[in-house]
Amino acid sequence: MTPVSEVAAALKLTDRINRIEPSATLAVVAEADKLRQQGIDVVDFGAGEPHFNTPQHIKDAAIAAIQGNFTKYTAVGGTAELRDAIVHRHAVDFDSDYRREESIASTGGKHALFNAVQVLVDHGDEVVLSVPYWVSFKDIVRYAGGNCVLLETDEQQGFRITSKMIERLVTPRTKMIILNSPSNPSGAVMSPEDLTEVVRFAHERGIWVISDECYVYLNYTGKIFSVGSLREYKERMVIVGSLSKTYAMTGWRLGYALAPAPLVSALQKLQSQSTSNPTSIVQKAAVAALKGPQQCVLDMRAEYIKLRDHVVNGLRAIEGIRCTLPEGAFYAYPNISSFFGRGGIKAASDLAGRLLREAHVATVPGEGFGTSQHVRVSYATSVAELDRGLKRMKKFLGLL
Ligand SMILES: Cc1ncc(COP(=O)(O)O)c(C=O)c1O
Image (cartoon, rainbow, N blue to C red; front, side, top):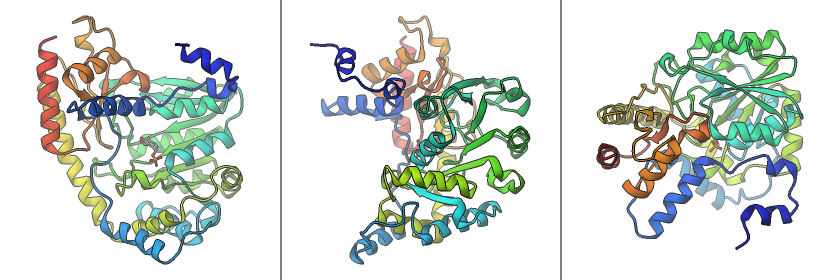
């Protein structure tokens, strides 16, 4: 058979598509699916999505939209009703003061982020990313022609980022800093003070900040914070939000950006030439989510905290695993480096591969997030499923 790389070369694909890799997380999902199709019972700690169902009142709004024939094109950046709901929710929860013109609805948070990077990053621009980073940041920047400048963080310090650390990496080509608190994959949460310091620093130097706040409501520190509340620094700031994790709506594909109006116009221009509006029906569901009762968000958060404690205790009980306490999102990021050298394992990808194939537990190896000593364990699942997976991990790792 002809190697895939030769087939791709024959297609004469663009440089930009050849610069990026398929999402590491989606690759694990695909491999786990393949095993399942062979009848193998896989415990899935790989998927990055809530195990909850979308709340009923949100589903009802979508059904009503279909029945009411709300099925035509809408304005490219979303209906006025939805954009108002987005800015209203943000203002109530974070004391921000965005206007409708400073908001855009997109087909998921990833889409909003992708578009924001495409309109801001040019060839040769530098973008500061802290390690571990969410897989897509790096490839989205590369697709735009930008160069990622990696900010190494210290696991012992809870992967902390300060403006002093960023200062050392800034050059005349620095265009953007991407922040993600709570973080995927580490679950680390930046303090409001650190976030403010970094945003102020970037503002003073005219550097853009994209703050990916897809997990902003899944913050377990008791100090929920959005940089959007820092009204005086809005001029160079893009907030990316998503309904995916907050309302258990990953499949619906609805995210948004909050940014200065001229930037939103640029995002709309790009969206108008690519995807157009997010699905009309989903927009109605999103309005119900944002304007309806928020108890579902609080309930899910309370459940995630219990699951977090359960999985971290379980992981720490496995000899050889070190695990920091994640303060947000729904991932644990255990350090598994003490297993290196045992059974031919040299890196996280070896361990994750064998865990999947031999113990039938899907995790995501850290390499995709820029570290080779960790695997990502998604704990958005039931306690019973966590226990099944932890038991398999313990047995497998104990025999290495
Ligand atoms: C950090 C981060 N940003 C953005 C997204 C994108 O979410 P969505 O496109 O479903 O809104 C994800 C999803 O996993 C994520 O983890």
